[in-house]
Length: 460
Ligand SMILES: C[S@@+](CC[C@H](N)C(=O)[O-])C[C@H]1O[C@@H](n2cnc3c(N)ncnc32)[C@H](O)[C@@H]1O
Ligand code: SF4
Image 1: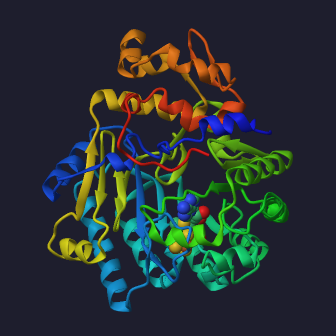
Image 2: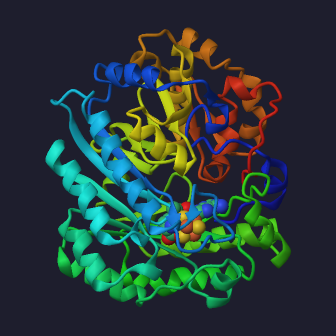
């Protein structure tokens, strides 16, 4: 797949990533602990009834210069200890308000670097969760890991404490790329990590994360990364497009100084890794994600049932309302997003005072919930049928089209450029259109019809 360069120039705009709808920079301050308690209570009556738990560990031993995550350098041990104690208490405080009949379908640790914590802490958090919540059969218990800090013993203890999916942040294998990005290489060979984990339990799934668009990367070198890990047969692969947002993450300026690849090289990195992965049994999911074989995500994609939350793509089976714990973490409930404070000291202080450490949030009105469904359908399943969505909300097609401010002429240029097929039933994103999915989504977003003062990363 080669993406025509004139289209790239035309569509490489600053747009929301739609990790959530509305995007996180629409969240407003003013939410307090009591309101959050009410929202939690209300979520028991909303769908989905399954629970997804997200645990945020913000600490990293070093900060990678490309990092766009909510991460901080490791503070002193007493602060880490107080943070984990606060996390345990926050989990118990939320648990007390949830209907005990509800089940957990997904537990995800992200960061920061969860595996930079002493493993005893992770075991303690999991013990609390497993002894207090009921789980569905075969839940997804996932952790993001930096391979520089994985040892056999650490991995063994993670598996014993329940994890069945490991996302390994490879990013790039070239020492020069990693060094310029201020990142340590893997301590163990990647094939050892993969085979050791699978040897502990054949049901364990291993994902690899890569990132493209960093200094010293070329289309050839990045593709070589991908080729070299194919023999290890990871279950899923993500090739993240580097999001350069130095106005939010000042440390990213260091990469600008080191020299970022131009848009054309970056696109070639994407194109050639895409070709190599598709030629080797992987299928593409959403943007930049790949899976192979009988993967649940592929089955969901084929049935138009793929979903997304802040933790990534998921299926109807494992998607619950997301209850998030730790600094900066965002709960994603049926009609509300609620984000915790980003300050570690404030987080600990509030939890110690028996308050939820919430800071920002957003409550969606009915129309926004409908728009979110339309955008999710497009972003995840690459098509949108008016009647299917209208039926879901007991609306007529006219009512649905008026909610998304549907204006057929807004799609003309997408159709002329062969990114989108429009039928009476709805729209289907073409193969070429998959690479311009954010540009397509904005055409259905009433909030983006008029110019906005919000800043977003470039769409390519
Ligand atoms: C929390 S990190 C993964 C865990 C661990 N801290 C690590 O670095 O391996 C989640 C993923 O976000 C991706 N990421 C971080 N900053 C990014 C950025 N600015 N643009 C795109 N992807 C980014 C990285 O590929 C990383 O694997
Ligand atoms: S990429 Fe991972 S290790 Fe690097 S700073 Fe971000 S969260 Fe930390």
